[in-house]
Image 1: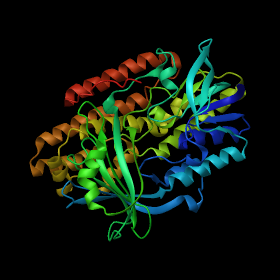
Image 2 (image 1 turned 90 degrees about the horizontal axis):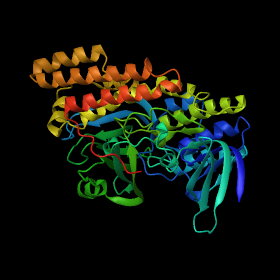
Image 3 (image 1 turned 30 degrees about the horizontal axis):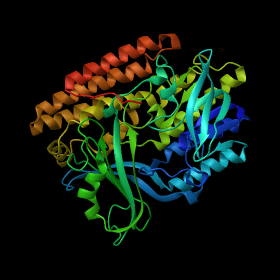
Image 4 (image 1 turned 90 degrees about the vertical axis):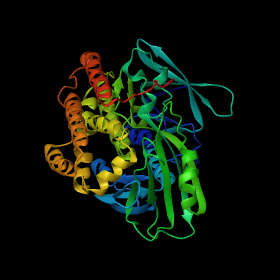
Length: 459
């Protein structure tokens, strides 16, 4: 069987459904391919938290029925859990299934087509463009050929479309294993509700419990009886197992009824060098749009999807879909989020090399406050005011090596932010040269701090 659409989107997560809605709302014929059955769309293992500013940026007002709990900020604890810092900022915990079903209903109500329980089998190219994809319904014989003018890969951290593209396309980039965290989490109805910190999403820095990542405790109701608790560890040759660590360190602390459990892989690195190539766009986890430091990706996934969908729609209306007509998507994304994300990738690698006593010392001595962390997260750079203030404290408290490391991190964060903001290519023909320069800066930094990225992924 063969069908034809304006756009085919692989993946019905928040990124895929955001892109689909933006396109169907403009009158395009859109199909969404999803491996899960319809009633499980939205069911994804994650922390469930999102800053409310992301909804405002998209002009959305989601129904209250998808919101489980509201946060007034994030609280970060030291490894001993004796010292903490509050980072201001409003956020919510969403019910992922209800959220996903709400996003899906918007697409279907506007005429979008869903192929649920379908997996991508192959991709066919013609004239250096994706002409069609071949999909199969799970558990049934036969294949479907689906043609489109354009395609969007929103299939997640281990993408299904990108690896099938020609190796010379920049969308076929293979990252390092250490560019990802693997996570495990449980949603629990506690026997005894939390008695404090209910208004915060809580992050615990502890390299024994979560090497290369952190563990979290996110309340999911105003009474503190239901929680989302889990951890992420850096993926790589060390072979860290998040479920093993969860069972060893966290499970004994949180007694109650298990409501949901699961694990997954999260990209924690800079974004793809381009979100568009030929007639293909890439969004969400498939484009590595997750914040490298705190691992939050719902808001940035929706943001990337909206930007790519809008530029793809403009290209479709103009009658020519390729990397040139959609290039503005890259410039927009890098300006609003990608440059910050890339600079935070520099910070992420440095933080992954710190030990528990470093984190304990930093939080005990109040080296950084919540406002500074918020500023760092929103701007993606170690601004001079922060470095000067922190530098004075570090000199007084006698850790000059930490100050020198901080200066190195600041220098490279600024270099990378300049690369993504001021030096990002104006046209696709300059992309290869820019990629080589960017890789050179990241490789230089890894050598400078002694960071081994490990092997590249196999997909």
